[in-house]
Length: 131
Image (cartoon, rainbow, N blue to C red; front, top):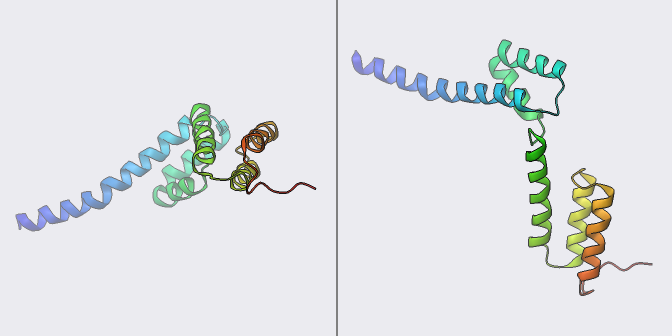
């Protein structure tokens, strides 16, 4: 009898505790974000509280990465580091920069500056031909 109560409690905690942690994370994340207005924060809080599992799942799926300006700047810097570190030729670097630019991670000016840096420091082997 006591052993059955232990296992029921164990499985309840095994399932319930992680769900509560994810739910709490979603609520904290909603309040930390500076890119969501007050009205949308209220809507998301209502969804997460009124429909805990589905509302939390929807929020975590649609939320963009980076809750604060500092986190978004760190993500952008990490993206630039990846381009610089793992691209071995100019064509690959420019393709990766274009992808970051298309996704909105680089502004037009940043894209042009990085492209000029890549083309200026490239050896020319693999650089796209300009006509």
